[in-house]
Image (cartoon, rainbow, N blue to C red):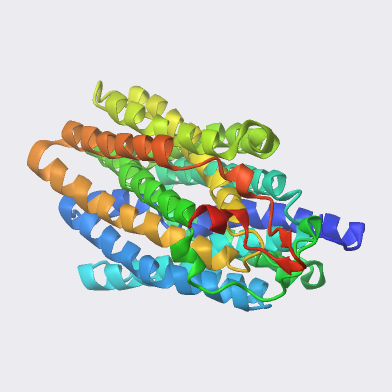
Length: 427
């Protein structure tokens, strides 16, 4: 842990727990509920839904890397998270008032662009408070509270939607946003080491590097590029699966569509909690690549299982596998990036760059799935997404090294600081 008052660190940890819990609903905006709302309440077809969701995701792609660079550069990390939460909430609340194509695309684009701040900012604050030695455990804890928050919010949304209709999710989002603002502001500003938060001056390696590496390190670190490709394929396969399940459920029973979608989300989030805890507890000893590979392997299995039955209980049951894959991925992602960018000072912009890649995958996923559904049906769409994930499994297995072995920081050579192992390995 970084050197600081233990009571201050304890307070910061509790505030981070609360922030991750309440931001769980805010950082994803309407998420999969958007597809259900547009299908059942606004009577959009699947291709049009996929297009507007992809447009919104493109806005996030444009904003992602600059957001990571901003988190690296600024000392006002809490403020930018507060502003992002407000923008996401206001943009989503505007949707029922302006439900035509262009306003929906614009409002969701704003929400997506603002939400990209949260992952790098939360990871940066966690690293700046707890340091590299405790980072994996802290990220596992962050993800545990995040998934618990998602499960609670989805459960409340499902029960409320059953009685009051799909639009209740907008009011729930607003309530969670208010709680998230209070939680973010409860994190003590003085507890954050902003140099450590961007990956500089890791005391455990006795690093003398007090200036960030050039931005070109993102392109010269070959393992980072391979990881970005795998992350892109993960999201190209994964992003459209839950919305497709939601559409299938809504078409079977319009009145139960949102509630069944909530059941899917709750089922997955409940499973994510122990797997996020497992990553935090065991990834440093078992290996970071092994966990990431496991997250990829789950996707082809899940895609194939969705095609076996349209029974709502089966679909919700298969959705449990999403909890395994996404639970592992969410917890191991910032850990691997921190491995590769240790002592470069580019941790958060590297997160932004890789998330940009995975956002490209997510944007293409919904468009691809919508087109396949219209042309060949839901079964073909699930199998197509599973095949994409299988390609990612092969690339990860063959080309991605064990990044944990690279997390040894810069080495001292002849009185000078050598490049980090991750950068050396890329050349």
